[in-house]
Length: 47
Length: 188
Image (cartoon, rainbow over all chains, first blue to last red; front, side):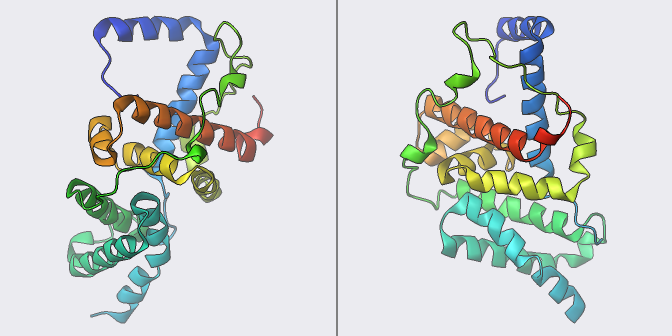
């Protein structure tokens, strides 16, 4: 999330996420947080 | 100059100030940056053409001005790590001896559905305010302004390790806060 990972590292992470339910959920939570803060402060109703 | 337009943009000032303060910790500089933003908005109004919500557009301008400030290095003071920024082992309770999650994290579901709700962003802001100033600032630099960690470390004059640890703590803090204040009510 915060630095470039080498190819081997990325493969290892993806493999782990594929089998670890908890980690997969955690990763999705972190991704959610990222999407949310990029959208911050959200839409104003008035255009 | 259309008075209604000026009023409408002016109304966003308090909001922009809150964001600028999170990033610029110096009240005077934050006020200046917001002022510059409002002026730029009035001057560039013809380019806006209602393409998005007014606030979104203004925040876009503000972000750029904040980044400019940061890159100009006009904040000479390096970040001073505070005890409020967290301690070693702060989130240890979330993991068991083997380093696995002690409890299976909840599914937060589709972001799009949640982000449609205005109330969510109010809660998110509350959670941001709950972080220590340093953690909030570094998190926003990374995620809101989109700066690379290398640039962040350089600006704040901290080591990359410190950077990553603080980002980790900021994310864990926000996660805990959102779990408590927003996701608690929903099914796991």
